Length: 427
Image (cartoon, rainbow, N blue to C red; front, side):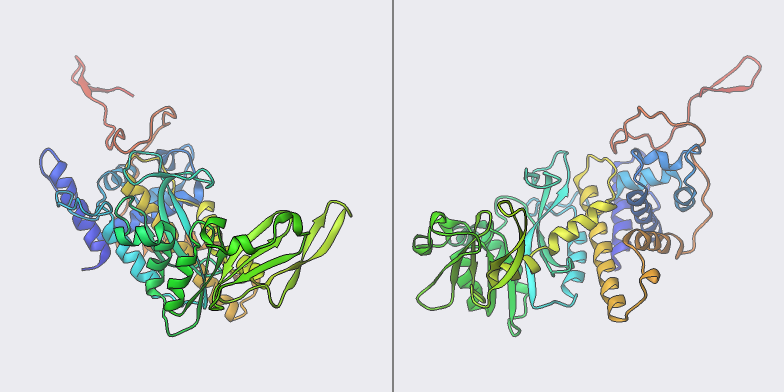
């Protein structure tokens, strides 16, 4: 069965289970696609409340042409990916597992480069959720954590949503820890026949992680904490013994793992199994003493790390530009919107690769915003459907909360009969 057919079926089942008359929602796969199109357009237009998109004073015709307001809220309040009565207590992500599986399977089919980066990604959500974490260093500190593998140009190739305790087996946690365990888990889908280099930050890098990856013919380069280098950090020069541009390096007895310290404005500690301080290059830095930019010697490991590590941050930035972000109390809705945005960015990056290979003129290339509009229109109008009637006709109270549980799907006022037999409508 097609994924969208599953979503429409489970949405109808959920509505039937919670309806007082046990009526089905009569939701079709085409309507789910239209709902997705509306969410994509909302990320492009960025109005503060969802109901404003159907307000006549603002007059955003494309949204009202796709779906009536009341129908949008009906689908949004009932959208489900599994049977809500199923017993899935062992899997904390069971409510969105079909969605995650479908997106991840597509990501695994994408072409991979020989350089891969691993980092965490936040799915913004401030509501109630057992899996919610807090990361103060992130632009969106509250939400669900998603561990991601990406190419240098930002293409997401694999991911695992963090579920808290029990995410990794106990033996892996004891021997490797969470960071290194995640790296090895994401590297399970890497083709060991081809040479591959994985780049990580100090949260993931460790000596044990480097040794385990080497056994799988996977190389590692990443910043590292001093307490994860074994005895190597004691053999390195101190910061006082080094000046700007100096490098201190230590290699293990097997000549497989190198730990090096490079002094810039501050010292940087890097662990690598594929490159060290050899073939040093240079970079430009601002000199406070000379009041100008100067050339500073830079190890090859640092240069390769800076070149290949930024793909996930780039992807996050592209998502943040037009994130489908309408306030909701339901974390599955937020996860659904996030992965819709992730898929669109992945598709756009693949499109960029293709047009770069074919040397398409710059004025003929679609920006991410234009690409999102094209996708939304394709989802909304590709399938045949009945004409849409407008469901909102007046000025909307801006003080009304826009939340799933408190949203009124219908806004028909009670009608009272007058003495003359006519009906009076309270507005």
